[in-house]
Image (cartoon, rainbow, N blue to C red; front, top):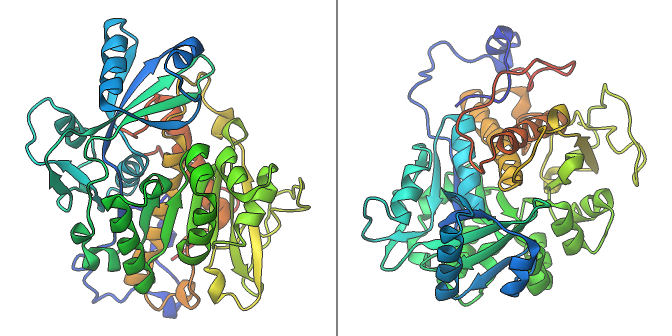
Length: 432
């Protein structure tokens, strides 16, 4: 597995005896390190429309709405005839994240969901498989009769995205298709609030089973927030779920603020850390925040300038690594913020997938921690349980860079890994 960022040669040759890799160790014959994600397998169909078009169909701008299959087909044919469709891609929040994780890590991950039993060349299931990275293991998908789900992604001139979804078989993943041994051996389990929308659906029951298995095996459960509409429908359930079962949460400013009942982004992040161990919060043109916990004895102060917003000197301990709160004797909340890489792309056509890309970088860093623990079990890095391999500050930089690449290429899925970047004053992703 590749480690994020440019690494210096000295990092491969640790100088302390207790962290040295034994020369007789077989570095090839090692256990697999991977992440697992559950998704409603779906194809995104992007089109440019004006706001009047949304009003014609009574669509709520900026939200994700379930629609009758006939309505979705009608919208699709209408936009196709008017040549407003700009692309058809394999989609889904978790699907995008897993694909990008595979590109960044150049290593395996596992997707769980439902797909067509009979796949034909050129159909949506075929397109989904062909445009998903080969490192994404699709062998555990549940084969079902019926059409793939479609999401009409309607982009208005202000670049806001409105989704109209035809469900197809996307909710048909059942608990009997949850491979317990695969989840128990993963570095993390990724789910989204889209899976929790319909409590009577098979995929909801499957997700609950997977979370239970992950919690029993001490596998971090990562929750990606959906649109504000989903949070509005399930807010109380989500808060309880977050408190009891989730290790890491990811969402944008609107989603996290709505869930926490706090308008200020940094204060919403601070409040979210009362419920979970780590939070990724994207704030659009203002970049992203990352927050977590670290034991008071293990915090590291930043070498950069201190910043104050609604929380004074909030980035004081941003050079610390995130820990599960339960393992902190005296937990401190740690925060970092980063502005868009190079100010962001010069022209942004579509923000679809930017947050998923940022999350994929976070998941890669978590897997890097598992990988390093497997390879160098006696390293002082693992005397205390940590969530991440790198400092909060470096993880945020990595997530920001991945997000930039998605925005710059105008596609929710990375086509290649990130170019090498220069090392900062802080050591590059912690020495081995």
